Image 1 (cartoon, rainbow, N blue to C red):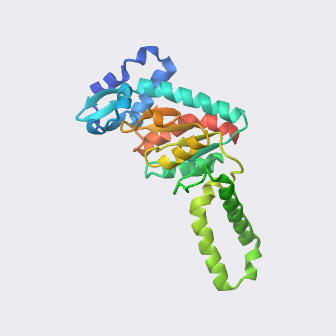
Image 2: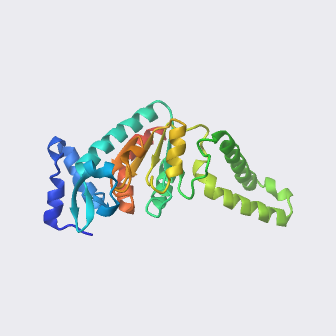
Image 3: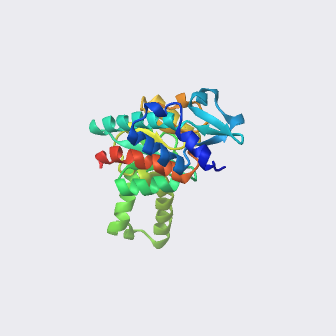
Length: 247
């Protein structure tokens, strides 16, 4: 669904717009262009998301971007606090809309990430996961140094297959040595286990929450469309300056 020019202007005049700064109003325009204002159909709306909904158009919920901006600002400030304390950030996004964005962001900024599949116990059983990470890193180092050449060709083929299988699970977190100070989940609906593990370990979670979810599911909810790549990319780009301080 695409809003008309008049409807787009109407969305920009949200009930919270008067409390926004000039800079935030410009951000609101960017968010609208990135598609963050598009929620899901009204029948899927979670009751607790209603305060964050501006209107319904053709049966689709339109998210109040004024609310999103305020929430994003709080999340950004918290990330700055976490990074300033010396703790790391873990980025999670395995949905079709998020995984490519996560991989590129992780490679660019040296941030630990999960973009393929969340491995159960990544946070709640971190000690065991850390051992697997160390083993994966050793296999990579040994292959690059030629230390695996002592094995037969058949054994090396099997080791190569093991490395590639482990790469999907551990490459993004290969530099993790301790639990993160915050977990940013771009698709909480898809990665509910990651959120629940973070909660169990008392790790704050930032998440883009669509209209079908309880915003209270994460510590710092950012109301917005998390099913469009450009929407997810925009949110992450806005958080990037705060996150990059750890690089």
